[in-house]
Image (tube, one colour):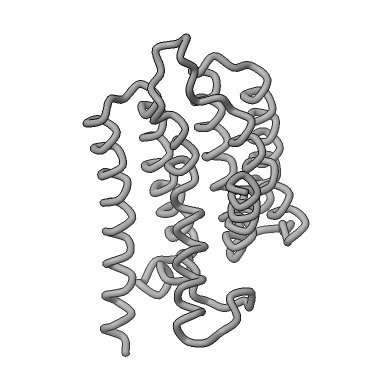
Length: 208
């Protein structure tokens, strides 16, 4: 059940992120590379190779999808990418008692995909609060909120890329962490997301 929920959630998270040119593709490229590194450090070969293939395909697409875009992803692309990444995250073995890895490694995907999940969850909550269908399209996504803060579309993209990288890179240390390190790593990622959320929603309140 949890595996099914994870695959459905992450598939839709990348579909939600396809609300601005270059966003879903860029996030997919960064997260697939970091997840490939995490899987490789865990002693696996097959999954990292799959993830590198995904990263290569997405980067090649991103060259033409980055603003001003000449081609566009659409649901057919974002849903497939999200599904592949979700499955690769499930296929990866993050904890092996025979290696010097701790059980905290199973939480690696939560950090790697923290920003796509944050975007989806925050949008769903906002739509639910105002009575909109959670499946309807609007301009309440992470990227749109950054543009409303005064950033250009390219600056908003780069900001989300950096936030994605900041949370995803923290996941690399998680399989080697003890309780204290794991708490600090999650605390750091939570602080990044909370800072973003506070800035966004404070601006929304001041704009009313």
